[in-house]
Amino acid sequence: MAMKSILFCLLLTVTLLTQAAPPPLIAVASNFRWVMVPLEHRFEQETGYKLRISYAASGLLAQQIRQGAPFELFISANPDYIEYLPTKKIRQKQVLAYGQLALMLSRSVSLPIDSRLNGLGRTSKIRHIVIANPDYAPFGEAALAILQGLQGWSQIKARLIYAENAAQTVHFIVSGAAQAGLVPYSLALNPALKTRVQTVLLAPALQPDLPQTAALLSSAGDVATQFYRFLGREASQTVLRQHGFTIERTTR
Image (cartoon, rainbow, N blue to C red; front, top):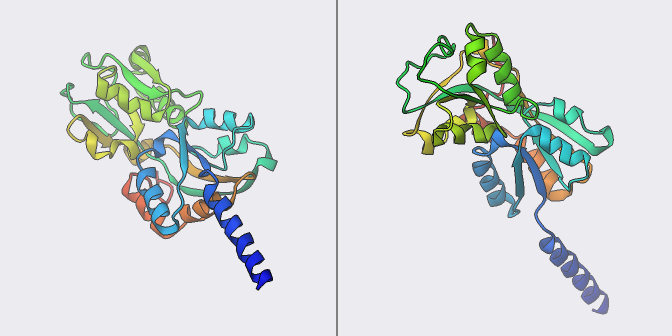
């Protein structure tokens, strides 16, 4: 009986310590902000575990991880930022989906929406065109490359402004700070934006190759590991499709 009591106390202590541990800290590219809501909710329903999410541009998150930030999982909008990390910091990695870009216009701009961006630089109705900072945000880097390849680049360049990250590009357009922008399609599908902006998915020929990649870091505990596996499941891929990502590369 004494031995059973000791074992019971030990198990109870381990359980209480596990429950008392803070939720794992997950670094997530800002274009995932909208889709993380249902993913996080489903994971908590299935496991009972909560997560702590820190959103920012992928490049900034990678810098924080290199500097010792206590993240256990990193979801990057571009695998290059995972390759930027020391090998010893990465336990596993997987491509979750592929990101897509959309043109977003303020409702105050009465222009035909063109998935090929024809005439974007020629209209006087657009004073500012916003993209995410290409130095840190993969969607911003991809958007800049697309715009530089358009006719009228010199006019577009004169109107171009940078947001801190992909999520902030949407805020700039909704607030009126910019009248147009190239934004992640995953953020453009937020129902709250339906009456506030106009959006069109860019034509396949313009879509960038942006593998959305998750890296399980060497500091990951059991909960973060479970979430990493959860992200690779078919049910999670269905959620990603519903929120503007593709599971296969765009055919050009």
